Amino acid sequence: MAAAVLALGASGAQAADALLSSPDGRITLRIADDGSRFSISRKGETVIADSPLGLALDGQPPLGALTLESRQDTREDRVIPLVATKAATARDHYLGTTLTFREAGGGRRLFIDARAYDEGVAFRYRLEGQGPVRLKEERTAFVPAGDPACLVTPVEGAHELPFERLRISELKRDAGYDVPVVCATPSGRTHYAITQAHLEGYTGASLWRDGPALRVRLSGVPKREGRPMSPAPA
Image: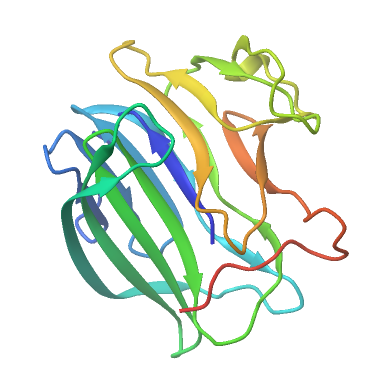
């Protein structure tokens, strides 16, 4: 599926929660041991407060209670070529993990792939199985720490509308906002963008205010009936 990306940057993590830090140790992503919540901090300051994770499947029962079944960590440090950019290469340097969650009673499995870079974090969901699955919705949301003033632009088809600076509490509840949404932590020491990446086989999304949160809402694929496409199977 698409990866949710926080391009940057300590929440109180439970002992059993999965923690992933950037190579320089300044950024920490926490994912709850039941796969239901996440948070992000940088240099000990909360960037994204406790926020929900999850998927709702179309035509299938909701995923039941999950427990963390296994964890597989990875490390990457390489130079990759770039095309049509000012720089010829870029350093791909991150610490990553794949968290495998299992439904109670030995049911379905949900995978969360996560990466932590010195400049930000990214995560995505994967489902077990061979065939495509349609999504009813994502339950993913981002709760920015404090009530930051963010640069936002409404979703109106094009991606070239002017940005406006508004606090989360000032955003309309009945309007979607395009990605990226660019905010700052309460201290002003970290500025970050919430966006999507790697949309192959997936659909676009916008962010909608839900109380203090920015909730992900999927958009249908143009000229295709029905629900948005699924995340890639494992």
